[in-house]
Image (cartoon, rainbow, N blue to C red; front, side, top):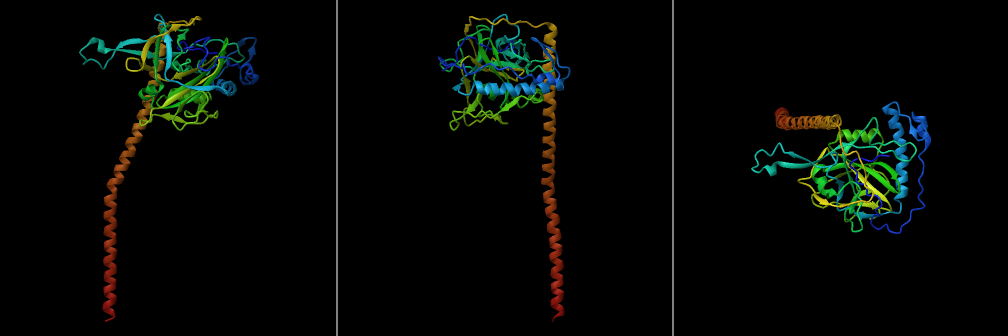
Length: 383
């Protein structure tokens, strides 16, 4: 199906605790042919394009539901391990995934030139791979939606640390998901996107949607991605001392937020030949202040990607990021205006409260004086 040029797929590696385990009972199933009635005809291994975004959304929603059920089946008896760090790899000539070193525009007062240099990972449009499956449509890469983000892998090795090798290069950025969350998206939502197979390995793709990323949130909702309970799902979840070790398979609407009093621990599914990927919906991540750069081994099956972007593609990428940024800023401005209006209304109410109290006191005084006058008059008439 789809493989982003930012993914970190480690073929042939057996995840933690999976040696000797067989999953022969899990058979690859073909997705239903309902897509034929939703605007697409499949001829042999070629697919005819869907002629409208609405038809595509109708189609992909059906497929995502089927793939989600397949993922649940595959992970039904899987174990879970602590995900100490998520990670991504690249090689020095990879112009898409490698770090970008720039001079910080906010560092002009710093004395050292070295202090002004910052390293960043930048989001880019993902690449789609053709997979050997019927109706190979991707919710992340398609003619109508191309989700921007930065791919990470969560799958640990035997010691619950990042896998030692990668097919994408020897340079690795690894970071605690909790640290990344606290710095970049204190509140986020988690969506199931896809479940697919490449040769003998299986992949589950999840999308991390920061609260501020309205564009990515709309893309997930329009395509019917399944929202997961961040604290209880079979794939990647936040655990605490009171959490159950066997998370529920039910998809619930729930967002995660940073709790400053406790250190969130995230756990990930481990099963034979299974890799969990996160598309983190951040435009940029500053690697100078988060995580660390380490060296890793190069996997025997090196993944060949395009590794470059044309000038036109670079312009489109940055234009897309700026467009999404503009949308997020507009939304933030609307929220600030609403907040300001609420504060003004509260201030007006607070100012009116003393005036209203004075009016009530005045009216009550007049009424009491009138009643006193009436009482005195009655008393005089009875004498």
